[in-house]
Image 1 (cartoon, rainbow, N blue to C red):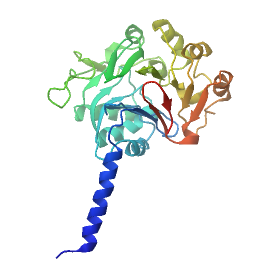
Image 2 (cartoon, helix red, strand yellow):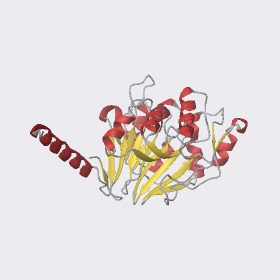
Image 3 (cartoon, rainbow, N blue to C red):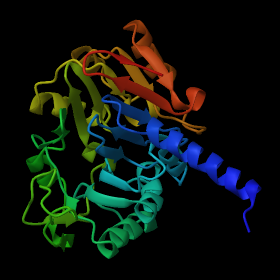
Length: 315
């Protein structure tokens, strides 16, 4: 029996879904969202060609809310997930991400620890047969015209700060699920996970430089003053437009000389309620003295930056 109520309800829902679909189509712009995940880090990147990436996942599953708001409702795939270093405030939310989404590649350092979160992460990666990759200084990959360069960690430095005897070998990286599609990152003979170290895990943080046209962003994880001189010695650093401020705005977050080389126009501090005093007065004064604009996730929530390859803005 024909029911007008359900008929018109179906049409209404269909219109809503169509509008949602049209609004989530690629717009030819680069979108970066610094997710409000509390005291932790998570940044979602969607390139103009609609490939996407998640850097870190925060301390819990709040990252899922951020992804739900910034990914199309029908999109259940993330091209690359990168863990800057294996500490809970960057790692824990990725457990939920891996269980909720189809992840094509997972980038992770060789350093590990004995925490339950890290062990579960490795278990999930193996169970779901997600291709894994270790990257080092000089490695590069791209999403169309959006170029990513790894500035740190340097391979010899890593080798001298880890203990090989506890290495866990994993199978070689495989091609993406879609037949005929080349890997977005270079295929290797194998990756290493779970190496023990006496060095502070923050020092292993991936420093990832993003460039799209003349626009650039630096994602340094929690790599603070203890490692930034090594990063400067290893790389010819250039100016960036946006800096994800290291280590949640800690007083040891950044060297003044490092800041003076990269000269960001905007700094993003990913921070939540904490007992560490983050962001510290020392960090904010460094930015203020250089007239660097500051945005904080604890005050503004998710922070989106959009770029056309020349200019950038916050919607």
